[in-house]
Image (tube, rainbow, N blue to C red; front, side, top):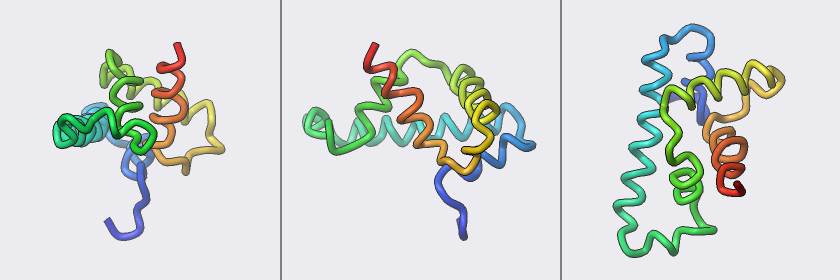
Length: 102
């Protein structure tokens, strides 16, 4: 990984990766979230307020990978000054949290 921060690969993907590569990146994030949920088991509710996992899983529930790719591409296109902002942060703050408030 040498020197690459969170979300670097997706941001690099904005400048040349295929749609499949972007989808794979987000699919991997989804897998990690689901693994964390499964590992928590009965303690899942205890994660609230201490982990991004419940917010991400519930706030992005029902949103397909293709839609996330589109939303992220649009976000970074509309906020070019924030291109270094980590993808996880954008997913969490700009996409998952607002969906929980609906």
